[in-house]
Image (cartoon, rainbow, N blue to C red; front, side, top):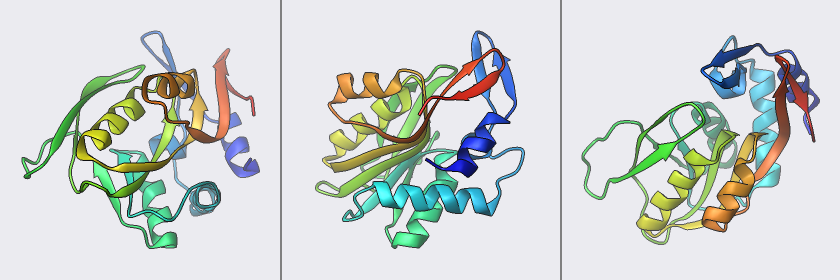
Length: 185
């Protein structure tokens, strides 16, 4: 586990949105400030954990983008962003996603049948985003080689595995209790 990531999580602010206690962190939110040292540390750990013999890395808009960019630059693997708006490109695949605090459509472009891909995202909590990404990639005919989320918060890993059969790797597991982040693993 990353001491830098762990320490930054322990000190991040918590806000309540409805019944959801949301932790605000540079990796998951891009605020208050994304330090290059933290991004470098996280992306280096990601590279050590994933299958790099792939054609593309896939992430969802928005906070997977900085991590995917750093990993892409370090590995020379191109990436695809599932966007929250449609572009009406030929072959675009829309998919519905629901998380602990939002729901909406994601749109997949740039994946061809047979592409070997890894999925990389910032946080898994309910698993809603990952299930949507996996479903879209299956519809596109992609070969999913690895799924990794930086921060595991909740039961999302189990939900994704039950709904899709894919195991989700994570760097750190947390819980939010009494207004603070506790590191579990």
